[in-house]
Image 1 (cartoon, rainbow, N blue to C red):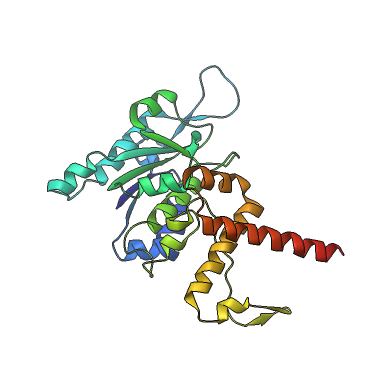
Image 2 (tube, helix red, strand yellow; image 1 turned 120 degrees about the horizontal axis):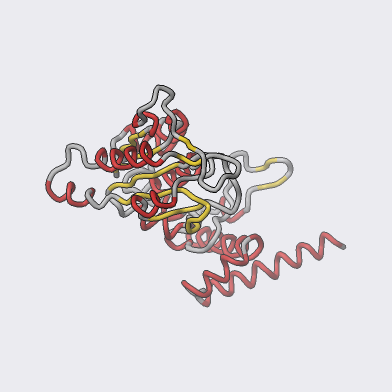
Length: 271
């Protein structure tokens, strides 16, 4: 996959291009990331990328001309050196603006974006970008949550990291992505607890089933914990699971057992 990221702070993007899973994906060529700075498309000596908003008010708005030129250049960069079918695919490069007005970025959106051959991510700053530029250049808008950030770089990096995990070959173990929360058999479920050495830490032992070597029982325990933790912490997700994927009879029983054991544990603690 090729990704061009439009930002006035290109050094910030090194956090995902040089470290961790995404850094390895870039290093191995599974992911290509190009950073495009709108300042490089300005025509004044100060390289100005913001201007006053019509109607007055606090704050500034990103200038239209340099940002549009940067977006168009970013789209061209996703097509460099490609021929044939690959070139045809990238001509449809999707431009995404990270914005509070966008749809919430969830795993379903990540799965869909991971199928694209190329993306352009636009990280806004100041009060945002001109609405007419959004209409002219942007295909989709995404938000990572209902809170205010200083710019679109962090949301863009969140999106990039989430999408990179879904690219074939990026994760070391072929089952790793499928066992993540919200993916594979865990759609609309939180992940189960994880443990490593030592077997006893702070007076608490690793659940015995995980030491048993019995893969069937371990899988069942993990599914039970995922269902129970979702019921406990994200009931909205559990309702979505029931509505969209449904719960099997076994899952209903595992969840009922978890709830019963949880309530019994709380009752014993209160006593």
